Length: 112
Image (cartoon, rainbow, N blue to C red; front, side):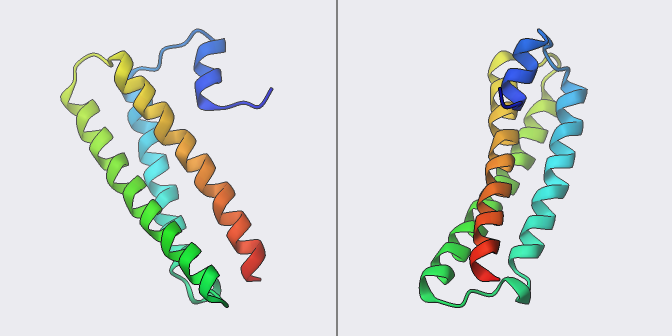
């Protein structure tokens, strides 16, 4: 079974605290900034129009993930107790980062 954030928290019966979620989201934010910097680098310039469209799509998605990440951090800071819906939002955000890494590696294999 592949370990994801969702099944890690479920199998261990652990409900993350708001501090744990904030730490994970801060790391997530750092990763997203690195991805954004990487995709905007000249080494990742697309060679074809199709690759250009894909790179633009990745850039937009990264910017959206960064914005969502910051919004989640603000939401969690505003809440005292971590609600179930916030836990699921954090899980989705962290899984979106994993998906972004996969998308980026696929893109990278076509560019180089």
